[in-house]
Length: 333
Image (tube, rainbow, N blue to C red):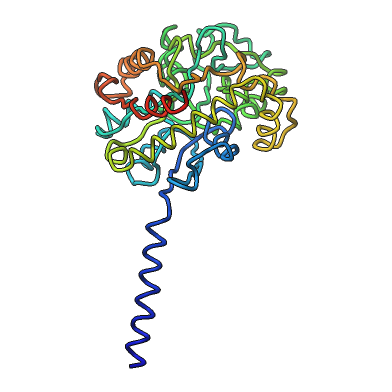
Protein backbone atom coordinates (compact mmCIF):
# COMPACT_ATOMS: atom_id res chain seq x y z
CA UNK A 1 0.00 0.00 0.00
CA UNK A 2 2.84 2.35 0.87
CA UNK A 3 4.48 1.55 -2.42
CA UNK A 4 1.28 2.34 -4.27
CA UNK A 5 0.95 5.69 -2.52
CA UNK A 6 4.56 6.53 -3.33
CA UNK A 7 3.94 5.62 -6.96
CA UNK A 8 0.94 7.93 -7.24
CA UNK A 9 2.84 10.71 -5.48
CA UNK A 10 5.67 10.46 -7.99
CA UNK A 11 3.14 10.33 -10.83
CA UNK A 12 1.50 13.51 -9.57
CA UNK A 13 4.88 15.26 -9.45
CA UNK A 14 5.66 14.10 -12.98
CA UNK A 15 2.30 15.32 -14.29
CA UNK A 16 2.79 18.66 -12.58
CA UNK A 17 6.26 18.98 -14.12
CA UNK A 18 4.92 18.20 -17.58
CA UNK A 19 2.09 20.70 -17.16
CA UNK A 20 4.53 23.38 -16.01
CA UNK A 21 6.75 22.66 -18.99
CA UNK A 22 3.78 22.98 -21.32
CA UNK A 23 2.77 26.24 -19.71
CA UNK A 24 6.23 27.74 -20.23
CA UNK A 25 6.05 30.02 -23.29
CA UNK A 26 8.48 29.28 -26.14
CA UNK A 27 11.85 31.01 -26.13
CA UNK A 28 12.50 33.23 -29.15
CA UNK A 29 16.24 33.65 -29.69
CA UNK A 30 17.00 36.70 -31.85
CA UNK A 31 20.46 37.47 -33.21
CA UNK A 32 22.65 40.56 -33.39
CA UNK A 33 26.24 41.59 -34.14
CA UNK A 34 26.68 45.20 -32.98
CA UNK A 35 24.78 46.27 -29.81
CA UNK A 36 23.57 49.69 -30.98
CA UNK A 37 23.39 49.01 -34.71
CA UNK A 38 21.12 46.00 -34.28
CA UNK A 39 17.68 46.05 -32.71
CA UNK A 40 17.89 42.94 -30.49
CA UNK A 41 19.62 44.44 -27.41
CA UNK A 42 17.35 47.50 -27.57
CA UNK A 43 14.25 45.30 -27.75
CA UNK A 44 15.32 43.39 -24.65
CA UNK A 45 16.14 46.64 -22.82
CA UNK A 46 12.55 47.91 -23.25
CA UNK A 47 10.64 44.69 -22.78
CA UNK A 48 8.48 46.57 -20.28
CA UNK A 49 6.66 48.00 -23.31
CA UNK A 50 5.86 44.51 -24.62
CA UNK A 51 2.35 43.17 -24.02
CA UNK A 52 2.99 39.54 -24.88
CA UNK A 53 6.50 38.97 -23.50
CA UNK A 54 6.35 36.39 -20.71
CA UNK A 55 2.86 35.33 -21.76
CA UNK A 56 2.94 33.89 -25.26
CA UNK A 57 6.76 33.97 -25.59
CA UNK A 58 10.07 34.85 -23.97
CA UNK A 59 12.98 36.40 -25.85
CA UNK A 60 16.77 36.24 -25.65
CA UNK A 61 19.25 38.34 -27.67
CA UNK A 62 22.20 36.23 -28.90
CA UNK A 63 25.38 37.84 -30.22
CA UNK A 64 27.40 36.60 -33.22
CA UNK A 65 30.62 37.89 -34.81
CA UNK A 66 28.97 38.09 -38.22
CA UNK A 67 25.81 37.07 -40.03
CA UNK A 68 27.28 33.94 -41.74
CA UNK A 69 27.46 32.14 -38.37
CA UNK A 70 23.72 32.59 -38.04
CA UNK A 71 23.08 30.22 -40.95
CA UNK A 72 24.56 27.35 -38.94
CA UNK A 73 22.57 28.37 -35.89
CA UNK A 74 19.33 28.40 -37.91
CA UNK A 75 20.13 24.99 -39.41
CA UNK A 76 20.80 23.54 -35.96
CA UNK A 77 17.64 24.95 -34.40
CA UNK A 78 19.67 27.28 -32.15
CA UNK A 79 18.08 30.48 -33.45
CA UNK A 80 14.46 31.41 -34.16
CA UNK A 81 14.79 34.93 -35.64
CA UNK A 82 18.00 35.75 -37.48
CA UNK A 83 19.10 39.25 -38.42
CA UNK A 84 20.65 38.43 -41.79
CA UNK A 85 22.50 40.67 -44.18
CA UNK A 86 21.36 40.58 -47.81
CA UNK A 87 24.48 38.54 -48.64
CA UNK A 88 23.95 35.93 -45.93
CA UNK A 89 20.33 35.57 -46.97
CA UNK A 90 21.52 34.72 -50.48
CA UNK A 91 24.15 32.28 -49.23
CA UNK A 92 21.64 30.53 -46.97
CA UNK A 93 19.04 30.08 -49.72
CA UNK A 94 21.13 29.56 -52.87
CA UNK A 95 24.22 27.87 -51.42
CA UNK A 96 23.13 26.16 -48.21
CA UNK A 97 19.82 25.01 -49.66
CA UNK A 98 17.74 26.61 -46.90
CA UNK A 99 14.74 26.94 -49.18
CA UNK A 100 12.31 27.46 -46.29
CA UNK A 101 14.00 30.66 -45.07
CA UNK A 102 11.70 33.67 -45.14
CA UNK A 103 12.22 37.43 -44.86
CA UNK A 104 9.71 38.55 -42.23
CA UNK A 105 10.60 42.24 -41.64
CA UNK A 106 13.07 45.08 -42.02
CA UNK A 107 15.89 45.67 -39.56
CA UNK A 108 17.74 48.55 -41.19
CA UNK A 109 18.70 49.97 -44.56
CA UNK A 110 22.05 51.44 -45.50
CA UNK A 111 22.62 54.40 -47.76
CA UNK A 112 19.07 55.71 -47.90
CA UNK A 113 19.45 59.32 -49.10
CA UNK A 114 19.94 61.62 -46.14
CA UNK A 115 20.93 58.79 -43.76
CA UNK A 116 24.20 57.12 -42.78
CA UNK A 117 26.09 54.60 -44.89
CA UNK A 118 28.83 52.29 -43.57
CA UNK A 119 32.26 53.77 -44.22
CA UNK A 120 35.66 52.38 -45.19
CA UNK A 121 38.53 54.24 -43.52
CA UNK A 122 42.19 54.69 -44.49
CA UNK A 123 44.98 56.47 -42.62
CA UNK A 124 45.52 60.17 -43.30
CA UNK A 125 49.25 59.61 -43.62
CA UNK A 126 48.95 56.58 -45.93
CA UNK A 127 49.03 58.46 -49.20
CA UNK A 128 45.82 56.69 -50.21
CA UNK A 129 43.45 59.22 -51.75
CA UNK A 130 41.35 57.18 -54.17
CA UNK A 131 40.11 53.61 -54.37
CA UNK A 132 42.65 52.69 -57.03
CA UNK A 133 45.41 53.47 -54.50
CA UNK A 134 44.40 50.35 -52.56
CA UNK A 135 46.10 48.09 -55.09
CA UNK A 136 48.59 45.89 -53.26
CA UNK A 137 47.28 46.92 -49.83
CA UNK A 138 45.93 44.93 -46.86
CA UNK A 139 42.20 45.37 -46.20
CA UNK A 140 40.36 44.35 -43.02
CA UNK A 141 36.94 42.69 -43.08
CA UNK A 142 34.90 41.32 -40.21
CA UNK A 143 34.07 38.02 -41.91
CA UNK A 144 34.37 36.72 -45.47
CA UNK A 145 30.91 36.68 -47.04
CA UNK A 146 29.39 39.08 -44.51
CA UNK A 147 27.33 42.00 -45.81
CA UNK A 148 29.97 44.68 -45.28
CA UNK A 149 32.62 42.37 -46.76
CA UNK A 150 30.74 41.96 -50.04
CA UNK A 151 29.80 45.65 -50.12
CA UNK A 152 33.45 46.63 -49.64
CA UNK A 153 34.51 44.32 -52.48
CA UNK A 154 31.69 45.54 -54.74
CA UNK A 155 33.01 49.10 -54.39
CA UNK A 156 36.54 47.94 -55.16
CA UNK A 157 35.36 45.86 -58.13
CA UNK A 158 33.69 48.93 -59.58
CA UNK A 159 37.18 50.47 -59.79
CA UNK A 160 38.84 47.40 -61.26
CA UNK A 161 40.24 45.89 -58.05
CA UNK A 162 39.61 42.20 -57.41
CA UNK A 163 40.10 40.10 -54.30
CA UNK A 164 43.40 38.16 -54.12
CA UNK A 165 44.60 39.61 -57.41
CA UNK A 166 44.83 43.25 -56.36
CA UNK A 167 44.71 43.28 -52.54
CA UNK A 168 44.98 41.04 -49.48
CA UNK A 169 42.29 40.49 -46.86
CA UNK A 170 42.47 39.85 -43.14
CA UNK A 171 39.54 39.09 -40.84
CA UNK A 172 39.03 40.89 -37.54
CA UNK A 173 35.96 41.69 -35.38
CA UNK A 174 34.31 45.04 -36.09
CA UNK A 175 35.18 46.58 -32.67
CA UNK A 176 38.91 46.01 -33.33
CA UNK A 177 38.92 47.87 -36.66
CA UNK A 178 40.07 51.30 -35.33
CA UNK A 179 43.04 49.76 -33.53
CA UNK A 180 43.97 47.71 -36.61
CA UNK A 181 44.27 50.95 -38.58
CA UNK A 182 46.07 52.68 -35.72
CA UNK A 183 48.70 49.92 -35.53
CA UNK A 184 49.02 49.86 -39.33
CA UNK A 185 48.03 46.21 -39.46
CA UNK A 186 45.53 47.09 -42.18
CA UNK A 187 45.45 49.85 -44.79
CA UNK A 188 41.65 49.99 -44.89
CA UNK A 189 39.10 49.11 -42.22
CA UNK A 190 35.32 48.91 -41.99
CA UNK A 191 33.43 51.37 -39.78
CA UNK A 192 29.79 50.66 -39.00
CA UNK A 193 27.83 52.79 -36.56
CA UNK A 194 28.78 53.67 -33.87
CA UNK A 195 32.40 52.72 -34.64
CA UNK A 196 32.50 55.30 -37.43
CA UNK A 197 32.38 57.97 -34.72
CA UNK A 198 35.41 56.61 -32.84
CA UNK A 199 37.53 59.71 -31.98
CA UNK A 200 40.86 57.97 -32.54
CA UNK A 201 39.72 56.52 -35.85
CA UNK A 202 38.68 59.94 -37.13
CA UNK A 203 41.90 61.51 -35.87
CA UNK A 204 44.20 59.11 -37.71
CA UNK A 205 41.94 58.32 -40.66
CA UNK A 206 39.16 59.39 -42.98
CA UNK A 207 36.45 57.56 -44.98
CA UNK A 208 37.72 56.79 -48.48
CA UNK A 209 34.33 55.55 -49.65
CA UNK A 210 31.11 54.12 -48.26
CA UNK A 211 28.86 51.16 -48.86
CA UNK A 212 26.78 52.91 -51.52
CA UNK A 213 29.80 52.90 -53.85
CA UNK A 214 29.20 49.26 -54.63
CA UNK A 215 25.59 48.64 -53.60
CA UNK A 216 23.71 51.90 -53.74
CA UNK A 217 20.96 52.10 -51.14
CA UNK A 218 20.52 48.66 -49.62
CA UNK A 219 18.17 46.59 -47.53
CA UNK A 220 21.23 45.72 -45.51
CA UNK A 221 19.67 43.70 -42.70
CA UNK A 222 16.33 41.96 -42.43
CA UNK A 223 14.78 39.67 -39.86
CA UNK A 224 14.26 36.13 -41.07
CA UNK A 225 12.74 32.87 -39.81
CA UNK A 226 12.25 29.39 -41.20
CA UNK A 227 8.89 28.51 -42.71
CA UNK A 228 8.45 25.41 -40.56
CA UNK A 229 8.86 27.50 -37.42
CA UNK A 230 6.48 30.16 -38.76
CA UNK A 231 3.85 27.50 -39.48
CA UNK A 232 4.11 26.04 -35.96
CA UNK A 233 4.21 29.36 -34.12
CA UNK A 234 2.39 31.90 -36.32
CA UNK A 235 0.21 33.40 -33.53
CA UNK A 236 3.28 33.67 -31.28
CA UNK A 237 5.35 35.36 -33.98
CA UNK A 238 2.58 37.89 -34.65
CA UNK A 239 2.69 38.70 -30.93
CA UNK A 240 6.48 39.06 -31.19
CA UNK A 241 6.22 41.36 -34.20
CA UNK A 242 3.57 43.45 -32.49
CA UNK A 243 5.79 43.94 -29.44
CA UNK A 244 8.86 44.66 -31.55
CA UNK A 245 6.95 47.19 -33.64
CA UNK A 246 5.66 48.93 -30.52
CA UNK A 247 9.15 49.04 -28.97
CA UNK A 248 10.90 50.17 -32.16
CA UNK A 249 8.44 53.03 -32.64
CA UNK A 250 9.16 54.12 -29.07
CA UNK A 251 12.88 54.29 -29.85
CA UNK A 252 12.30 56.19 -33.09
CA UNK A 253 10.13 58.83 -31.40
CA UNK A 254 12.32 61.95 -30.89
CA UNK A 255 10.61 62.76 -27.58
CA UNK A 256 12.19 59.62 -26.07
CA UNK A 257 15.70 60.40 -27.30
CA UNK A 258 17.12 61.35 -23.91
CA UNK A 259 16.11 58.00 -22.41
CA UNK A 260 17.30 56.21 -25.55
CA UNK A 261 20.81 57.61 -25.11
CA UNK A 262 20.86 56.35 -21.51
CA UNK A 263 19.89 52.86 -22.64
CA UNK A 264 22.63 52.92 -25.28
CA UNK A 265 25.05 54.13 -22.63
CA UNK A 266 24.19 51.12 -20.46
CA UNK A 267 24.72 48.77 -23.40
CA UNK A 268 28.15 50.08 -24.39
CA UNK A 269 29.33 51.54 -21.06
CA UNK A 270 30.14 54.95 -22.52
CA UNK A 271 28.65 58.39 -21.68
CA UNK A 272 25.10 58.97 -23.01
CA UNK A 273 26.10 62.25 -24.66
CA UNK A 274 27.98 60.24 -27.29
CA UNK A 275 24.69 58.96 -28.70
CA UNK A 276 23.20 62.15 -30.05
CA UNK A 277 23.25 60.55 -33.52
CA UNK A 278 21.26 57.45 -32.55
CA UNK A 279 17.95 56.95 -34.41
CA UNK A 280 18.43 60.25 -36.25
CA UNK A 281 19.39 60.92 -39.87
CA UNK A 282 23.02 60.44 -38.82
CA UNK A 283 22.15 56.79 -38.25
CA UNK A 284 20.95 53.96 -40.52
CA UNK A 285 17.38 54.19 -41.80
CA UNK A 286 14.84 52.06 -39.93
CA UNK A 287 11.37 51.74 -41.33
CA UNK A 288 8.77 52.67 -38.66
CA UNK A 289 6.48 49.92 -40.00
CA UNK A 290 9.35 47.39 -40.14
CA UNK A 291 8.56 46.76 -43.82
CA UNK A 292 11.59 45.73 -45.89
CA UNK A 293 12.44 47.24 -49.26
CA UNK A 294 12.27 44.08 -51.36
CA UNK A 295 13.24 45.96 -54.54
CA UNK A 296 16.51 47.10 -52.98
CA UNK A 297 17.03 43.65 -51.47
CA UNK A 298 16.59 42.02 -54.88
CA UNK A 299 19.17 44.38 -56.38
CA UNK A 300 21.61 43.64 -53.55
CA UNK A 301 21.16 39.89 -54.01
CA UNK A 302 21.74 40.21 -57.76
CA UNK A 303 25.04 42.00 -57.05
CA UNK A 304 26.02 39.21 -54.66
CA UNK A 305 25.34 36.66 -57.41
CA UNK A 306 27.30 38.67 -60.00
CA UNK A 307 30.30 38.64 -57.67
CA UNK A 308 30.15 34.86 -57.37
CA UNK A 309 29.18 34.62 -53.70
CA UNK A 310 25.93 32.80 -54.40
CA UNK A 311 25.34 30.06 -56.96
CA UNK A 312 22.28 31.51 -58.67
CA UNK A 313 19.80 34.35 -58.63
CA UNK A 314 16.35 33.95 -57.15
CA UNK A 315 13.19 36.00 -56.68
CA UNK A 316 13.30 37.25 -53.10
CA UNK A 317 9.54 37.80 -53.05
CA UNK A 318 9.12 34.02 -53.14
CA UNK A 319 11.22 33.82 -49.96
CA UNK A 320 9.35 36.48 -48.02
CA UNK A 321 6.41 36.30 -45.62
CA UNK A 322 5.37 39.80 -44.64
CA UNK A 323 1.99 38.69 -43.34
CA UNK A 324 3.34 38.54 -39.77
CA UNK A 325 4.41 42.18 -39.65
CA UNK A 326 1.34 43.27 -41.61
CA UNK A 327 -0.97 41.57 -39.12
CA UNK A 328 1.00 43.00 -36.20
CA UNK A 329 0.75 46.52 -37.67
CA UNK A 330 -3.04 46.21 -37.95
CA UNK A 331 -3.23 45.64 -34.19
CA UNK A 332 -1.50 48.95 -33.52
CA UNK A 333 -3.74 51.10 -35.67
